[in-house]
Image (cartoon, rainbow, N blue to C red; front, top):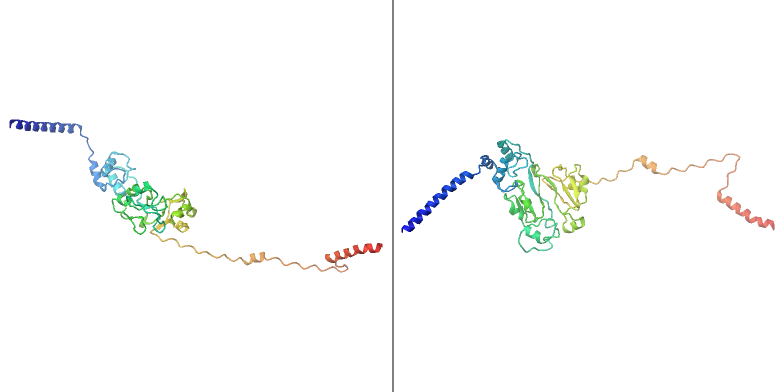
Length: 332
């Protein structure tokens, strides 16, 4: 009994001694943390989505407090208002950034891009993309297995069962970029968010030549360049057989929409421009018609008195031939 009692007392003494040692060590080597980090973390939305480039809002708050220049830091969920509030609290300047929205750049619906085979495997875009081209002949289009849907923490994206393509709800999208990172085909892009959710963009990322694109998808970009020629703002460029509309230069004039022969340029939130009817050729003016008609021949001048009219050319020729035949007869 005494042995058990001594053992318990010894263990208790060792525990108390270790606790005292750990207390003094923690006090000695503790890292002082800026109390402003907690306040900044409270100002952030707390989504912990990683859209800012950090693992969570705590990491973002720590960077905002410790960095002198926070112009490169931005919280896509909180937006400009959140960043202005944080900058005002810290006494720093926050960079202005236009709101963005995730945009799916693929128009290959089930009708435009028919299936050529069936995939019987893990329903994951990342897995399917690493194995083969996909269920269609297009090696650039959406696979439709919903990796972007699983990555979105705000329920802003879903797969449309009729088209087989993901659709983004611009009112819910926070432009965190999680869906952009999750897509192995890189068809999702963060683009400028226009008022009333308007948009004009090329819904294709295929870099194949026109003939190959049309075989795989009837809504693909063939790189014809008609949209580039009609754009008056230099917002459209064609590289590697693919047209791209710069959202910062585009003015939503919609002229390129009517020029696209395949419908690869998608118009959202607006009606297309009315197509101008073909005007018939204008009739030629009367002056031009008169100038085109041949001038009438001038009448022959009347012969002068006392002079014989010259014989016509055929009669003169006949007369010369007759005299030539009569010459041998006279000699004989």
